[in-house]
Length: 240
Image (cartoon, rainbow, N blue to C red; front, side):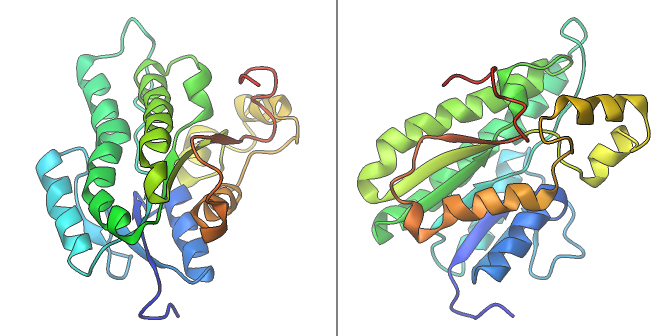
């Protein structure tokens, strides 16, 4: 059980998949996760919100901060909207930008006064290996690359207050959505596994372990970085 005075961590999209794994790890590490998601019926104390909507996001953030400042933030919520470049609709593009990018900025700005006052902050932004380029991902890749750009700017601007900002770039991670799109025995899934140097897809816990490191008090000299949790798939693709 989390101690009532445990440091709080705001996790967007923490109701399932990678976000839920990060929440579990945070509890193990002695933090108190505050989860905002579209579906939170199964999440004790979860705050329900449509994070693609600015007004609903503001309302949820106000509710989260009613219990006091929060100095750790995981911008995890996101949407994929796969489509080829010629067919990617403006509606899909706007949704990806709202949920994957704008929401992260809005959450950071809401928590920032408390972080500055504390002289401490940890921001972890969930980007993706797709930011380096991936077919059928125009809107998704653009939003995730934008998240890396924002991460770097925040690292430069906020470091003077003891606030770090880093990004995680997951590769293929076995979640319910991944398994639905990639059945374990399907040839496409086997092709994905064969392309990963460690010869397996990742687990949500692989990403939560990376997030735990970046959220730690002792990671204060690491900022503005992208940690690819991809089994080696970005080797030869990402810049040195």
